[in-house]
Image (tube, rainbow, N blue to C red; front, top):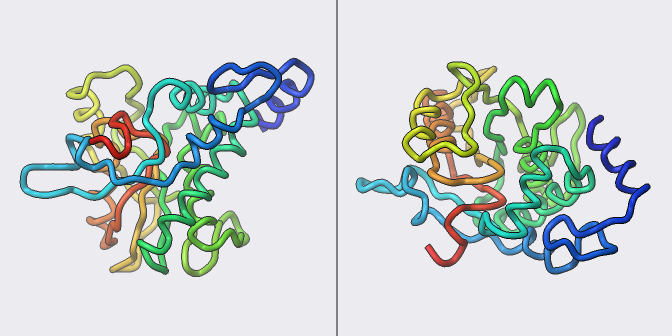
Length: 238
């Protein structure tokens, strides 16, 4: 796997913190704590989720998408630092433990869809994060057959993009909304009333999460909220 090779390379060269650049450590304590901070409701700072007629859904996030966190997330998404995979999964697990009491049992934790290119490269960052969140909600237990968690919370990667690949990074808010105006599709049906927590790596305008929520609801599911490791609106300040 790409991340295993990247991690092996890191062992052979001097390390510096992926967030702040501190020499001699792959990830320093303060940067690790940024990723594992308590999730905060950031919906008020996400324009397409906090609509005039009411919230489309509630989204929680652990960190502001800036500075050290932004550098860590970008390196994780591009596969430049293999060790960050384990760190972000652990951050998802920490978030899941804290959200579990609020969300209740019997959840499907569903990642936002990755594009075909990312699937070919194995860069399924939202799915990796969702796996950690599910394990955290379920108390860290792991199930088999690619599903993480117990009967109370399990990760299922069911969403696929509709309309072909469309680049979001660097796009304007308007372009992001247009790119995600077509809801993704589910690769298999949901049992009516299934409770779903959506997961993505970063929330900016909320276009992706809003489209995912539409797809789940059309399939008969109930969206209990969403989690992103980072948000362009700083948690607790929106």
